[in-house]
Image (tube, rainbow, N blue to C red; front, top):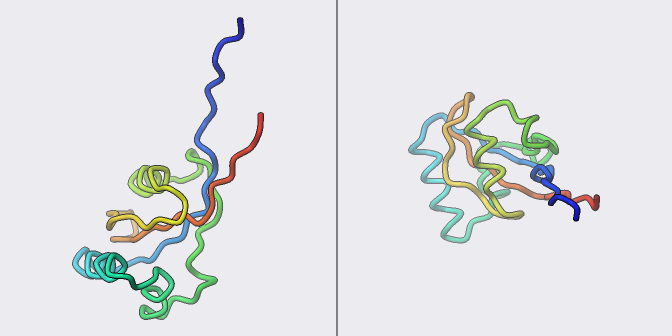
Length: 102
């Protein structure tokens, strides 16, 4: 009998919006919960769509523990609550989870 295979979490494509303080991040999250899109919140902060994406990462490639934990807890297409990252408060969105067949 083969032992069960343990696989690491699938890589994620992560986007983020950085805020100057937790209050602005929470207000933006409230707007998203009320129906405004993540992209619209970014545009209101003058963040171009191309600047939103951090990239695609495995769990070990994300150096900031708070961002790593939040991003790898999110289902695809969802937005996080404000996260206290090394660069200040952020909202994260996972736009893709890349599953591979072993």
